[in-house]
Length: 245
Image (cartoon, rainbow, N blue to C red; front, side, top):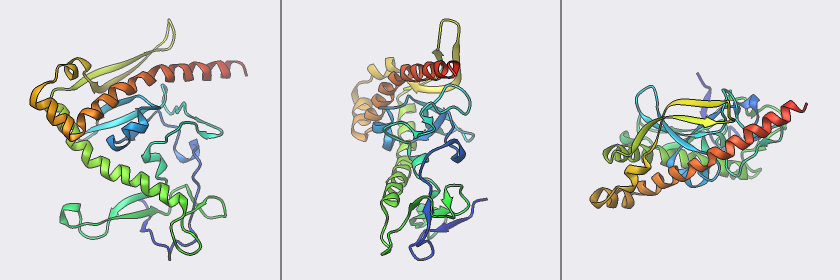
């Protein structure tokens, strides 16, 4: 259970959050949940694949490493990429509903904070959440942008995957990444966009995907796969550095 509270500038006037990234805060992961609302930024850095969760719902994942608990973008200096996925940039904050149990029942999205989160600081360390006058500090503005990406992307994601299924664009694969002549990393049970079927789309389906923005998301997913070679280079550089110690 988390100890969450509705964020406000009275009760949390002095709240500080440690914004840096490290393994101590759970950033040493080899994949991160991402949303279509951030695909433009994500595809510049990471390969995007899909998987089904325990409920059979499709999710988008950015591949960050090739071994368990390995984030190749993480080192002593922090998360070395131009973009950090929103699920990690949000820190200890999440979206809750002020009224009602669901959005359909009139629930209003509000920011909540997990006060037991390891990023919540009980010292002077960390970024202030509010300004002395009570306004939002720059850190909170960044968190709000990340939460907006998650909130907007979750609904878009459901509709996008339904459209991809209707157009038969999703292809079940085993991701095979060749590190050397003798070593092959395999990641089973992933989905990607079938480039062949994407190229054969025409008529109403193509028009519908284009108008909804789902076609753009499909092309961004395909474009992101070029980053697999970058992961291979980073992995081999990491190994070379370790072997020289």
